[in-house]
Image 1: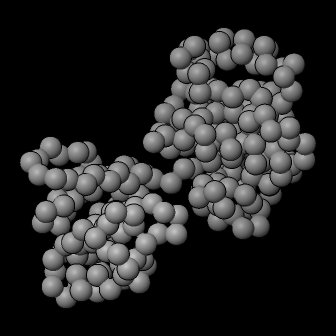
Image 2 (image 1 turned 135 degrees about the horizontal axis):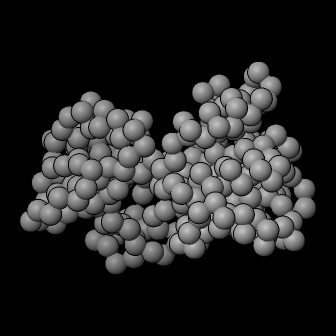
Length: 249
């Protein structure tokens, strides 16, 4: 099937005409069948202005904004905009969203395990470590590392709807300050590492800090899904699983 799509795509680049491909069980292309016994439709179209299209996608990603690409399946004409534009015709609508960003605070083995595993999940890590080492952990870009005093770092921290925040410092004051900032923001997922015995005290402290019941719905105490995790890598996996399960559509 891949070879068939590639051949159609090359022809599309030559004649500049879009085409709909139909492969699998019940399709008219009898010599290409899927091993799973299913059926798939593929739309192939030329991109009229590739440079502008790529620039629009790059700009949206750098600004961490969602962008909508609407394609007319009859003509192949594309429209890029921040929201869906209702127009007549048979449209295919695709929403490009920024990558999930994980802001993690801490310096323990779980934190380091998260920084290592996150990119493998397509998650961009960012480390808050007030007064930490001068250099970031191995593999973490310098611009994704903030070692300033906590008040300064939190003041400048911008959290959007594709941000997850996990406080793993094991310091009650620091963890609550970070969680309070995150719960009042657009961040979709917030967690604090610790034992279940501390949950009631932490919830009381967050209520006292003005956190509403609605905002608390995105808080996970303790951090991570219950997968019987024991070591740092397992706990990091449980946190990334939680982020994956709750990520915005």
